Length: 313
Image 1 (tube, rainbow, N blue to C red):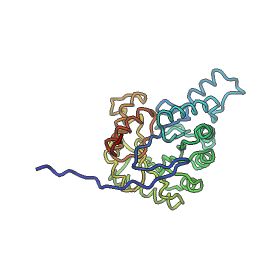
Image 2 (cartoon, rainbow, N blue to C red):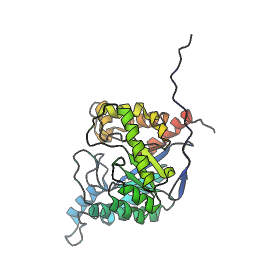
Image 3 (cartoon, helix red, strand yellow):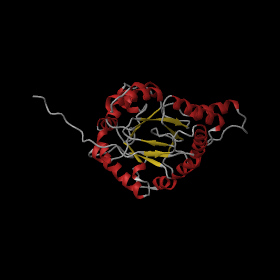
Image 4 (cartoon, rainbow, N blue to C red):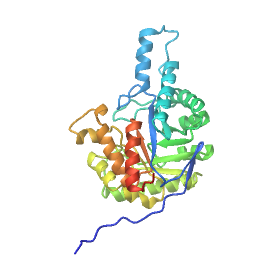
């Protein structure tokens, strides 16, 4: 006798969401979000300002060196070049961030963060007007300035915060909003149940603040307010988030949990681990994957989608 198989409840894909110039039809395929870090201290080593500031220190006079806040023309140019490259490799969305979220990162004031991301968003929007741009920030003033510069999505790593200020910015700007799960301490009595309920409350709060439910995306927050074991459980139980009825964004790229599983490998050597989470995340219901290495993840998503969603030549 064949043993009974456990089944996951079937959920219909959420209704399509317009993000800037593009309508995203959830369930049709997995979309890829490329990461553009306008920071000097990204955990993954790809912060565009690290080289810009070093170059300015070596080659610019004091009167022409970029300030601590400004990315400088060369960094903006590099950001646009990186954005073009990611789009050529298949990125569907570009996520621009101006403050590192790595553990023990140095806090950045809102005006400095705005000075980093706004010129980059404006330049990418001008160069690639057909590509939706996301701003990775938890500061309302930064989000508002980014939306004015061309961002069509706000990616809030503190999306489950009781403060609805970011949601009100999204509502006023008519842009979509990613609500990411996070906690100051990785303490849970029932991790998966609390993950879902925290996100459910965030969705309700954002909707009450004026963001249409159809413009909301949820993110389990891999690497944020969780132990390595919690992160792996979130991956294993990702399909449980479907009960929220919202598209799921998954951001695991190069994160420290992958390094731990891989025996302590540094961020730049975690590609294979990232690709494993991309494939398994798609099997679990991820609609968007947020990544540094676009080409490899696009190819992984194509094969995973063919298996999970069906494939036709």
